[in-house]
Image 1 (cartoon, rainbow, N blue to C red):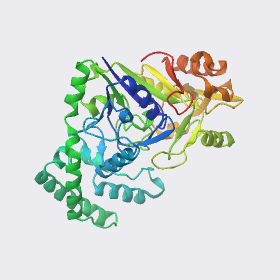
Image 2: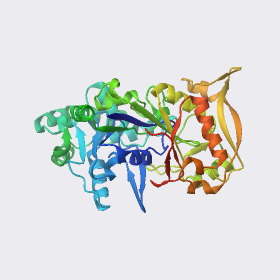
Image 3: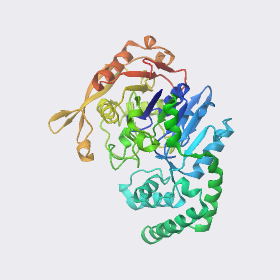
Image 4: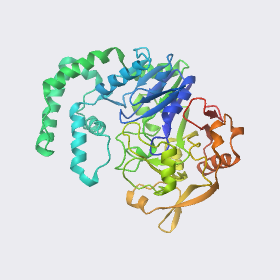
Length: 428
């Protein structure tokens, strides 16, 4: 029996989709436990590339059960678009392959409208949201006014809840934010259609996941976004609206912490970030541009160019502490191939001292000056390596530094986007 977590150890975009797809081969069940279709996971299988947003990355194995947990906010429109997209690529999505929690919150059209209008109202202080309604949906969840999947499946319950919510949301949309009111009948009828299409997939996933673990099956929990986008421990307010760290699994999938056996942090061999906020190791120069172009650092969901910088071990050490990481999977080490010298941040100079943790205050973080160690680079042939022994010596030194500073072993190294460009150093 194994119940293990895969989560992002940086600001997201670390390669979780590839790692989930790779490790799902040994899993029986793959569970998404937070976020929504604001996440984007890219998986390459053979010559095919798949871009997933809401459905777990294990869906590309026909014999795996994939679960959307109660911690996920579900946009039915986006869900069925993604199903159609996968079916066009030869992956038929059936209730035997996909389950959706009856406790998941439903993203409504007014959530997306509010998301957009709030960003406009913030002006230059905007957060950089994807405008997919994620934040407003989680707001309703915390406010206890949200509509859950189980509500959607009960016609009369849904009608009453929608009527109450839409009246309040339309007041905010029109009277506060200057938008146009949304039509009740259009939303109601459209979502009734979604409800019937969704019905066969809906289950109490807490029971299903618990039973799977207890029966000796291997369950993989797939996180979206990354540690520094966590609502509590990320670079607030430039964060997502859910708990992206390991603790989010218990809440978002309905199992206890004593059932978790491993937590693997996915980390790029460098650091990237999308949107606003301090970024201590950011490279606003030709090296940063070179990494962005070579690593194709553009968002799967938004298409936005990512900010790029040197690997920050303060961030990885913070992620290891918060989530109790048992190992790291280091991705895109091939992107750095060809650089003569490579730097790693091993601390922040802050108010006259060197710190090795990520401060809460953005103002404090903005004043942190990275402390670097410099390493010799490696050549392009790293993409051809298929075992640790085949890695260039300088790449091994680089990986060893990650282990020494964080106190967490590196269990997997990825040297490219394909499944076979992955080497396991320690079995998980």
